[in-house]
Length: 164
Image (cartoon, rainbow, N blue to C red):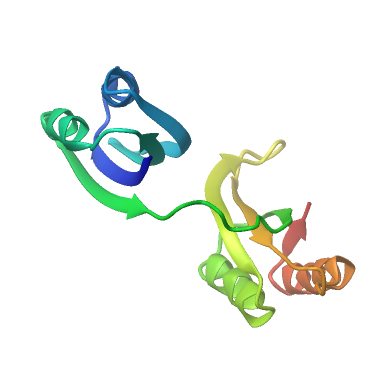
């Protein structure tokens, strides 16, 4: 079984997800994990799939899609023991350096960030821009999650943010 991770970015248009996933499916590939997002007029995807055969046909068909840049990476066997994860949602006024500060905190505690999403939404009453940071970190049995939460609350308070 060959496992491959692709990343692709290109101009967004209706049917792009269907085209990419159909190519993988028609070549007996199985999509295992994926993240897809539209930012401005660009569409980005990172996807892991497995296939029994080689991926030459998939590559050929994907590379025929107009205005799409694709990169391939062979993935090793997924035999690693999964660690538990903890999720955090941080909200507040959009300010430069929030992601750097929060990611630096987790790095200093040797907690691995496995997923991070940021987006702006309108605040419920005022309609002003509200920054959102969703973050997922892996931890081990020695991690004191209550302490992590308290320390994150202190950082958020200093940055005028709310930990949800």
